[in-house]
Structures are given as structure tokens and as C-alpha cells.
Length: 162
Image (cartoon, rainbow, N blue to C red; front, side, top):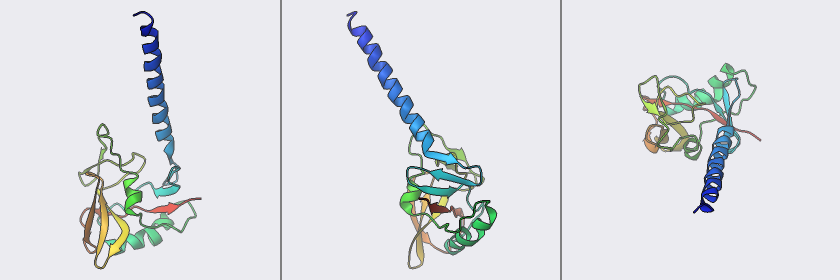
């Protein structure tokens, strides 16, 4: 019995160390650049640190990320775009222990804490006829809606980095 005890301690210590290192690596994935942008080193993306701060339809969202946002940031990039559904899913936090935060519109969202949304629905670049896809950051689901709808929808800009 005495011989098993040190083995159990070593095993438990190794498990704790692996859990700690995996959390440290996850925290290193996203960097707040301090200039209104957040870098995702895993997916080689740069995100705007905030959305457009108000209800917006799809066409307005597309114009906002391409023309309005670049003039509000101190960085010289002009290749901002609406994200894909997969890119938005990559910043959704699935961990049930993560409570997320409450947005200005009163919705709780589960997105990485470095990005601040003002409401929970975000438009994607994917469109079809008069509809486009959005992502719901409270429930972690995709939504297909008419592009003219505004209520609750936001624009969040992203760009590829080398």
C-alpha cells in the first residue's frame, strides 16, 4: 500500500501539470493588441475588438466592416471583411463552466472575453438570395435570416494575417 501512494501522487501531479499547461496554451491563443484588434494565432486571424455597437442589416454590416471600421482604428489595414460561420464558431466558448458576459442589449454571450459584443447575433459573409447566415453567441447556433432584418444583429470584422 505504501508503494502505491507515491505513484498516485506523481500521477495526480502530472495530470494537474497537463491541465495547467493546456489552460496556459489556450490563453496564449488570443492577444488583445491594444489598438482595437485581437489576434487569433491559431487560425491566423485578426478580429475587431468590438462590433458596430447597434442594430444593422446584412448590407449595412458588409459596408461597415469594409469602409467604416478601417477609419476608426489606428491600424493601417483595409482588408476587413465579414467572418465565415466557421470563423465565428471558433471564437464561441463551448465550456459550460464559462458564463460569458452580459451585453448592452441584455443578452448573455459566450464569446472569448477579448472581444466585446453589444448583442448576441453576428452576421456572416455567407448569403443566399435574400437571406444570410448569422451566428447566435448565446446558444452557439447558426441562424439563416432575411438580410433586411436588423434587430439584435451586429457586424464583427475580421481579416486574415500571414
